[in-house]
Image (cartoon, rainbow, N blue to C red; front, side):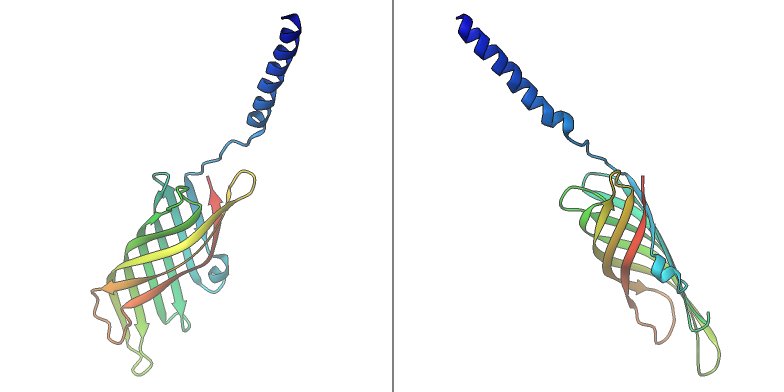
Amino acid sequence: MRLLRSIIFPCLILAILAAAVPAAGQDTEVTRKTVISTNPITDMFTWYNGELEIRVATTSTVGISGTYVSLDDDSDTYVSTQGFYRYYPQGKALEGFFFGGRLGYYRVEVKSNINDEEESGDFFGLGIDIGYSWLLGAEKRFYVGLGIGAVRLFGGDLEDVTLTLPTIRLINVGVAF
């Protein structure tokens, strides 16, 4: 009995310690709730955009974005403000593959090359997005996102304007907190 106790007790203590070591060494999962991002490459070409994305569930986020694009020496401009919803099917909102929808207000101003008249139009838009996002670094504070989609515009009275626009998140970078 004494031999059994001298073998079982130390083995039991070692088993408890061995089981506790991996648990003590595991990293705790960092959960970020908000991301602010922009595209620094297009920003240099006066194609400004910014996004604020907020985690509302383990699989979902909502957010707002704004865009300002100036073409042809500031004669043609595009401005938008959009709300969006993104679904992350793998269950880690703000990280991984997402798809979702967007709804927004769009203003387009175009200067005609023929008669130098300026036309403008206000539109509402409805669209879809797909993309992929990463939270990088030990604290998962650095954000990188890619995506593509399309928005269909409704309303407005501009002639010769395509009413379906692509949405491209070439590479958004930002901070998560």
